[in-house]
Image (cartoon, rainbow, N blue to C red; front, side, top):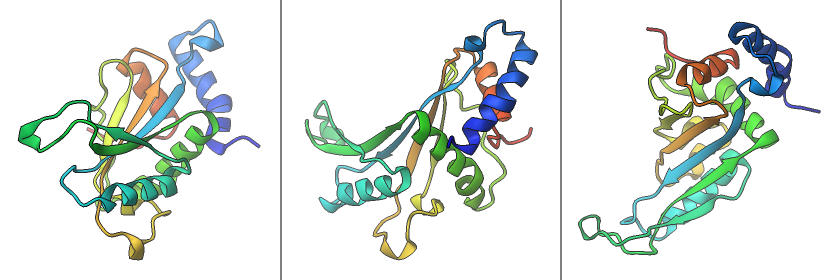
Length: 180
């Protein structure tokens, strides 16, 4: 059984975008390619910080994160080459649609004083990146078991190169953009 948001994409979003933008072929219609969740960890924290971050990211995404290490030494940041600086997960296909559904329906409305996300956070190539200041907005995280608050960046990568078309796709899929 396919995900609810994927069914919505196939049955509602594709025909609407095809009619609006006069696409001839169904393969021209924009689609989500991947979602990347990145959690940076300060290099100056204790050794258990990266373990806690990977555990939280595993609970949130359902996938084991890849550990990111620094490529260069930077003395001003007290950073050495090869030091662990974060973790990330790339979600595709069914896992991506499942995460997108949970993000839009459950997680984002749990943010305090949430009035929508800014529509100005597109990168010029059709990708949307936003930050979540605290991992406790995700219902998978147990409040009693966290040791430190940790933020994360979420990037939604689309198949189009235009920000306007990507924004139109995300709006049709139910992404909560703030009104002007």
